Image 1: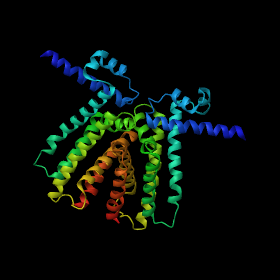
Image 2 (image 1 turned 90 degrees about the vertical axis):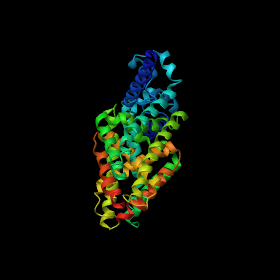
Image 3 (image 1 turned 180 degrees about the vertical axis):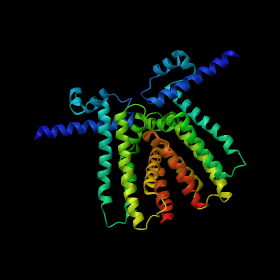
Image 4 (image 1 turned 135 degrees about the vertical axis):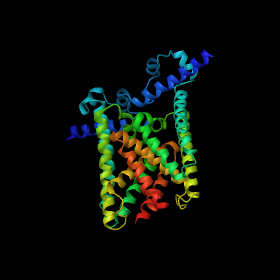
Length: 200
Length: 200
């Protein structure tokens, strides 16, 4: 069914080019015309896939979080590793993603979060949902690690998951400012050699 | 000297209106024409104070970090409080700032950081300098707290300061997403009741 294949590839192309363009500029300053020109896609075609630029923003966020979850799934289901080792592997993989793809590309969600908090309810809701998914996933591994006696039970797993997400977001922002992986390496050292280690 | 007073107030007005406009939109999408219109200032007047929009961005960042440092100074010099109590007071005041002025207004620097990392070298350098100033200030209080036996000496004070800054940035981003002070309250509880407490 070639038309379906074509459909999928045009939509994917728009999302890929859109993510790049927004990473370079911002969601608000990146005009639709520019994205269409870079993707070589006519305007009518865009509106076949997306109702509006906001709808496009939501699709970008959903794609980003889904790809990230896909990436984490094999790690999280690897029962040969302990829960704490899986948690560490999640963030080590995230570090490698930052290294391979550049910090800016991986920071699409916090960037949209800061930009759209005052602007668009639908994009805002998609960002919130992405963070909630990520926090819930980490809280689940933390609970497993607590049950296995790897992380102390004094910490509330949901709060600890939120702390890890907030610290990671701060680290990736700092990585862009410092143009260095050091803040993310500091995150790993702090969380796994100090924070979680001392609660074991 | 009325002309000087007028000079100062126009520059201040442009910075104040500019900060509001950028908090609502983004640095890149917020046109100079809009800022000038909102401030009721002619274009020629703008270029009397700022060489370019980038130069304006740098001035915004410098004003933001200077005002924050001014706010912290009386706390940090209050020798009636212990170093750890001063550190807590710094973040409690920052929390109150978020509460009183809204998260968006207080997140100007990370917002510009994410937006301009790929765009402007001069704005980027100003953002880096602002973070370095803040980290250095926190590291100094941490060293005092270590010397006073309030925080364990196993932690490197510079790394711990960076961790606090990264976690705070993540908390303020999350605060905007969740539209709640809860992430900042979680920051305070985690840092002062758990993280630093257990190292005392």
